[in-house]
Image (cartoon, rainbow over all chains, first blue to last red; front, side):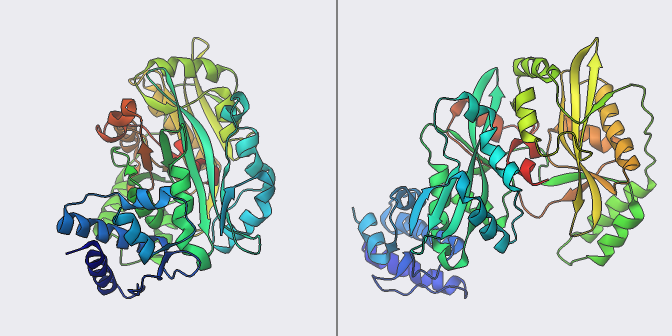
Length: 87
Length: 359
């Protein structure tokens, strides 16, 4: 399984876990940004789900909250997220 | 969307945004005084960032967070803490809320970050950024002394929700109704609504003890309570022995809007001798004054186990709060143990964070 498939898995699981928010599996979908439909709790829940999957599937331990927010970017799309993880 | 440093000129916009989302907000001068009169900022040569704001394409503030310096002491060492307050974001831009929190929690040269007004969401957000709940004996339970029992019970029934622990509440009410509290005191205390220079000497003596606490020096206390000083909302009970200040208790009178109750909140309780009978007498004195002022209850949040035991002996009952509001991100190994490893020692309360500004 590659990183992109792990992101896909996390998106499916996140969407199943609640009804309030939906992450569209599109590389341009904004997780953080002007067009993001997510609130802070949804972002935290998704990133935490993804952290767990990264560890389970790839044995990679990441502090995604730190890595993402320390780089003060205006937006974070699914593509940006993939690039951060694929470093 | 731009993230910029907050300035004192942003008052009106931050106030409007906060009020839109139901957050209480200080009057202009009280808000400015948080930084203009802060003892750390005034004595330090460095610039202090008062907070951050998010600005949209129309140059409007759509999010903000406050950054307030506090000084703590542990084993005679000064520890600078950044206190977070007033985290607010417009709904349309809610995905940026974490940028504000992350900026606050990743400041250069700061090793201690505190919030003691966290709601359920900010509690989870702080934890996501590796902040932790302090380990303090029953911090989740506030202590309440009922002065107007009829009114409190009537309010309880009126506002009853099924999420509450009915059995525990009935047990508490029963204990409080049956318990006869002896409020006779044998010591004459000095009353004030200001802080004099004697607090500096007391603070110097507290520094020698092995406790972690926010400064009790005159200038810090005056700063914290500046909007209440010399009003009948602030009461200071001072205990002198041989003309030396050896302990004090501060309580603040306010109105609980939701339940329409007049309450007295104990915010400070410090003393040099833990075993002195005068410590519980200061609490009794506070109850007696609160009664005279027609308060419906006396309310206490936090404090260490031995102080909580004193309150319990006097007749205070437990009231569980909805969430754990005191979270800390600590990067200083010297205080890690005291914050998170021994629940009986830590002695934090409302005075150790931004909660002190919203009483």
